[in-house]
Image (cartoon, rainbow, N blue to C red; front, side, top):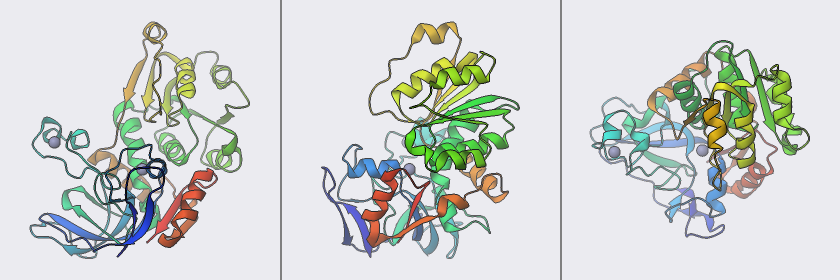
Length: 343
Ligand SMILES: [Zn+2]
Ligand SMILES: [Zn+2]
């Protein structure tokens, strides 16, 4: 089969290769990949700024159809339309695995950088990681569940959104616009989003279309000032960072009202100097969130199925696997909401 392989460490070092179709082992299924999203992490792997274990097939935001069952598979069936959590190679016996937090298992090595991923015609995955795609949800839409589940875990499971909360989302990328829809569905009273110049082209308008009450271009306006003006100088109940930008995070702390909640999901390239006294005096709570869990995947699939989160606009940029370089460039341009490859 054809696959996009990171064949050694270093800048680039990716190419389409002919590799064997994987054989599902005990408790695993073979999935025919129907759609895979390009993630910022894939671009970082290309740029050699994210640890990978070459040679390895890249790609992790996938949806597909079960076409073969390994020995011992209990509930998955041939023909199932599925998405998959990313917690492959977890040990199953550590405290994290045994308490429903296998995403934190030290042994975890996820597809797309730790083990072979989904920019390929087939991928093998343990049955226990699968979730069924509801009828009426396309494979392209389902490929969005992985990034959406990361947002859902941090925002809905850890930080929690209460009815009538005021919320700032730092960042205006695909995950941020998914987060916006989830937060609106929870009954937030006001959602303010921040972005940069490139978001003016398309994403700010999409965000407004999904109900963002205010959008701020942080390169043109002081976002802290705008947020304080919009909230009677109080600040907001919740700030969610999906930008991973140190400056935006520091501004985010200044946007919080006292006793406010900060949800940290974005991963900055460098360290952020936390203003300890400022946060202590405001009695702020920071919820760090990494990866996602079983329930967040089920929540996302349910929200999509019920139309609370709409994904049509995320599936407009589709490329064949052979055109992966064009697809990566498109993703890098920041102009597409999401770029999807169909192997
Ligand atoms: Zn991703
Ligand atoms: Zn473990």
